[in-house]
Image 1 (cartoon, rainbow, N blue to C red):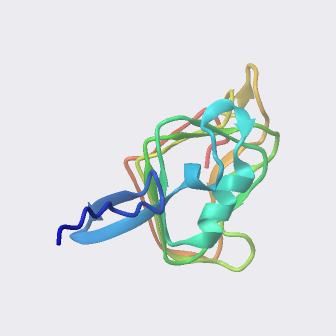
Image 2 (image 1 turned 60 degrees about the vertical axis):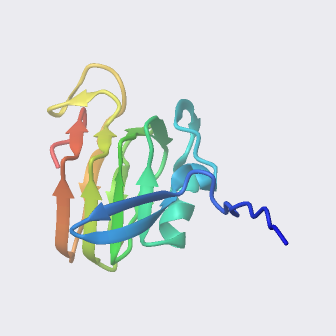
Length: 151
């Protein structure tokens, strides 16, 4: 008897990578509805991915963010995408009020949407890229942070 078995694919864009000799299976923000087209607000989809797992992948694209993305402890966020502010006065990534530990942000771009060195030519005002309080063991590696308040 011969069987023709086909693999079952749960996430069409699931990423498997190795960081610090550890094999990680990452949740892709696009599987939670993020578009990365620079037009659609992707805040809710990305926050849902953050809330759903501890290893998050942000593929190439421009993801509009209109409110704070609240991180949690023991999370890795990596990828090649750009998180672009789409509102005044937001923290693209924040720890919230609780404080967090063991966070890695690797390879992504955070774009404040037009603010350069505290002077606004055009774009949004008062955007902070990463604002963490009462936090420890934070690694930011190969991330590009531009056009925002000086944090």
